[in-house]
Amino acid sequence: MTTKNARDAWSPEIVAKRNSERTLLQRALWHFARPFVSRLKMFYLKTKYAHRADVRSLDWDWTTTKFNRIALVNLLLSKFGAPAYLEIGCASDSLFSSVLALNKTGVDPSMGGTIRATSDEFFATNTGCFDVVFIDGLHTYEQVRRDVINSIKCLNRGGWIALHDMLPRNWVEQNIPPISDSTWTGDVWKLAFELSKTSGIEFKILRIDHGVGVIKVVDPDVTLCDLRPELVDKAFSYYYDNLSQLPVTEWNDAQTWLRS
Ligand SMILES: C[S@@+](CC[C@H](N)C(=O)[O-])C[C@H]1O[C@@H](n2cnc3c(N)ncnc32)[C@H](O)[C@@H]1O
Image (cartoon, rainbow, N blue to C red; front, side, top):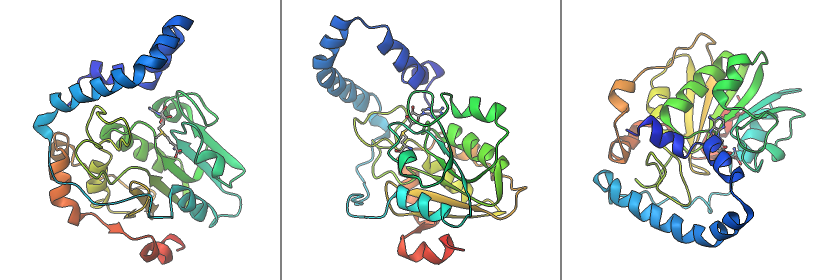
């Protein structure tokens, strides 16, 4: 597992602070050096974490699956008259700005959305309730676990929660800390094993857009199944070997359920 210091080094708050402290010349130099430094860093990290390497991969081309998280969120929202929407982790608002709800709250410590805070900070003082929550903030198992528990507490009856990045395709995409320049799902997948064994909810993972987990909360007093002792140190190999246990579903096959 990563140490706290290693995590802090790439947290959005620290990255934003580092950027704001640079002079103009430093920023210009950094602009040209960044691609090279980034490639060198990724090479170093892949070597450092090579003991977790697994040659197996999943042959999913997300660009050919046309439905995505935006279609899903708008479909879920369409079930409510005047829905309240919450998004955790908004970045450049690709999803947040495409959401049709008028009542929407977006939480991100760095950019996008409507509230500049981490999800933990937001939930600590939040008094609002939501019909649909999309969780896409810090992609670590422990963080999304907290985000799901907190989201359930402020979900209106009949509400839905969706989570991005549940289906990594290879060990690099899901490594903690990130060692990929492109897709980083993190180890959000670990939560899927808990959600699929939790009673009081219905749970599926749509095979679209890096894997979108969808939770229909049936019993508001739901207690998340706790597999942390078993899962915390697991890596891609465990996920790959046990993927058949997860409720991975095609978009078309989930339509009746999503509209229920
Ligand atoms: C993958 S992006 C979100 C993309 C966006 N949901 C979309 O679909 O277009 C992840 C975002 O989560 C934010 N983030 C990181 N840590 C967070 C935290 N603890 N709480 C909330 N957001 C966080 C990052 O600043 C980043 O903007």
